[in-house]
Length: 417
Image (cartoon, rainbow, N blue to C red):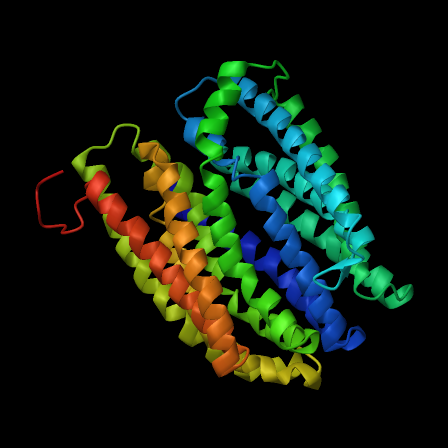
């Protein structure tokens, strides 16, 4: 079955793609002190933060429209998405430039490097458009090649600059800039040559895309705050060295994403296609897959935490060994987040993406408050606790909303649709 074949390919490409940074981890922890590694982690966190405003999860418009529009119509949608991305990039860059006039550093990052973040984010989002098209086409193998080569290029340049030229923590910044620029060009050419970009401005298309994506800004921002605010709080309340150690534990805990991403990449196109004509049989199949996915995902934190304790002495410098205490809790948080990700596409189908903003904003507010009190009381591990609670709140709200607005046969023996 194509669904399972693509899942295996996505899992394989995700494993290879995520394994590359793991191979880099021994080099980074050897050449960077925990403080420098913490600085790099904060920089990467800020890229993620900017993605909410520049990206707006705009690629969801491709998945939403892929199976009910012609290729020519889809090309117009993609072209107008490109116009929107360029506009949002220029706006955010100007705001960042003006803001940098008043600060020498932001979260310990020098302002000259802060100014590269909008550009990196913009190029990342254009690359994401290409990957989203490939994923909806079911071209899992080519998708994996693009994804792996991008990461490998970034890591290769990073190693060269770090080991040979001693650029320190900025090695990965420069490596990311160069790699993203190369694949930005490649992605545009690849989409254009295959007829997926039509640069004809269409005001109606722009309004429709923004109608879907603008309500997602609070959702994306809330989700990002939950995933990144922990290290920003640790940087402010403890120190950069602890951020570095915590970030290594975070890297191991995020192994969960290898499996959830692989599944969701296959699930999303199949899910949207199935609900174009949602029969009871299709709904029951969706429910069965959902239950199996949830059971598998909840086992991952135990397996990962046991595995990490066995292998970490062979991977990182001894100064990072304390990272093991964070792994299980971070992995559990991402397992819960992985469960949430299987429910939020229902709201895209319903056209109720504004509720995602409500749920994510509430969860982010809870997370910010708990981060302060938990870190103060428990230390750095309190940040992981607050992340788990925030993901659980967001996931529960989205599930209950879906259950109310889009009935599914969750009790499989029932015959109602």
